[in-house]
Length: 193
Image (cartoon, rainbow, N blue to C red):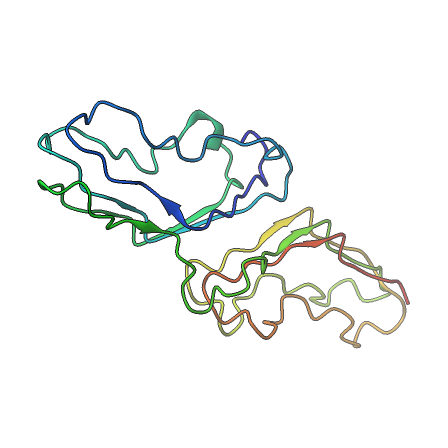
């Protein structure tokens, strides 16, 4: 997770119940798997719950979202919703933690958008005109979990017709109305006129 775009998508993470031996580590979650060194790995976790375990409820079995040393970069984005630690009783056999069960609207788990190197080609003779209104919160982007990671956004000059709108960026596409829809776009460029 030492890369700023390391974002991971995990589904159906489950912590099975455990009984009278709470000391046993039964869930090593988010151990960086092979292939997690790519900058487009995105992690979306919802409804993280820790199932009950046996007779020692005093032990801290869920240290969730403790910021690891690898998450020290501002672009390492992890979206966690409704993180819950369920009560621990005397029935550890009950599976009460169905973690990251795909909620409604998350039925396309690969809707993940990462934008890098967005460039608008140069235009011309009126540099005073605001040609880049970037990241203006579009409709449907009013939720704190609509996360789009943009790097190296550049607007270069363009030709002699600055009045023409050549870059409508981040117009909320269909399917971006859900807070967990995340899209991966690379090298989005608008050619020069």
